[in-house]
Length: 551
Ligand code: G4P
Image (tube, rainbow, N blue to C red; front, side, top):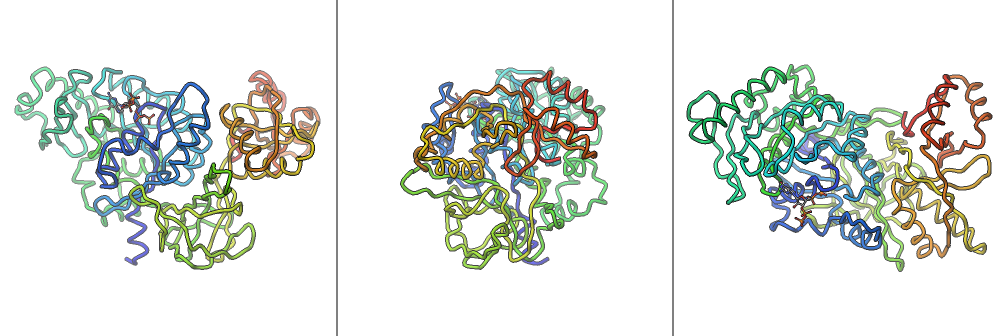
């Protein structure tokens, strides 16, 4: 195997997603501890955007500033190079999370045992489903009382529209929590609350062994056997450990070789089935088991679709796309970091690469890599890695950088915003600055811009109130422009299409007051209520309505 192949196959680039408070930060921190990337618990807290009820976005931005360094957390674990992409905790920044999901090869979802599937989890899972991203689920807070685990599995399947397969199983929960039976490794992991760590991990190939009673008690052993029987019946083809415990290179081949009849692996990699683990991130229980299984079965960088062709990570020429731009909030020097996901080949410092949209060659002397929570100048990086390119306004989301090929990466969708406002100029002498500011901030992905075709007015669409404040502040401080908002009640922005040009024209004529163009010039229907949208769908059968720009 070539050096490039070895490097690529040992990479695991993923994001941890959850509804706020389910335990994403805590789990991330524990994973970093295992990777030796941090040495004390609590180190990741600075990265956290507090979910304050007040919309103190300056405070949030300060924390976001800190989080640049931790936007990507890279570390080595066993033979693997792990890249965890951080996603903002505050749901007003959900759009950022959607984009980050375009740059990962898999996802771990954290679910709180007491809360089950929550709104944000559902939404993020929709994005994963669209992209067929492989998903693993960590059910957290088993040290607390919660939903019956079987009911939770049902809920996961129904609410997230994905098959699930428990690879570990809890023995009681809350104050009575005894630990988990690790189905995947056929081990009993015992939890001792006082020590708050795994005290014993006992190989238990056969749970009918009477020794089980000694460890967890008669009632619990009986219950565990019954539960495992049920799991065996309902979720029948749970793989046994030897099948997967093949060590790194062979496993990579298994993943590459789809003909291998390992149904779990195949379904997981196809995004159809989520392996489920139970544990407690706070108590560092069940986390190592999750990580050990994850590195074995999670995919290494996958081929990425461009308009021109499918780009394989092992292809030699370097290519990558910008999925996120992080602005420096310091008004004295307007600089950004453009985050680039390498899709193929190897990036080398001081090499000329092509900015495809500008048809311009650029050399990056101070690109940064993110290792062990430190930002370092990168000399080389491989497909799967994320690098930060210092940017003074050259990049916008979705831009491609290559070794020369003209490629355009697909799949950076916009989703219908939740909130809309007309943006108006509050200082007539600064309209040029305002337009430039709006243009650049929307390129950066802070919000979406629509232009109403009826009255020519600009509409800003966001997922949360905070972005309006962010935009207003940044327009003033970075562009010297003042804006004011005028409320606009809309339900959804829908991208529309039709096989019949006449039907499309007719629709646009009939609904001309509600038609807008997005930044790319695509037709968007602004529905002011669910009812209006429903009626439009009913009356105009030849029109297809989409809630995301990717269809
Ligand atoms: P998030 O990033 O998904 O928003 O969640 P985060 O990790 O910040 O966790 C939310 C709260 O849940 C935190 O408590 C955290 O300590 C707690 N938590 C995480 N994992 C577990 C677990 O396994 N068991 C229990 N019992 N609690 C858990 P907090 O009081 O909001 O924050 P802090 O004061 O502890 O920082």
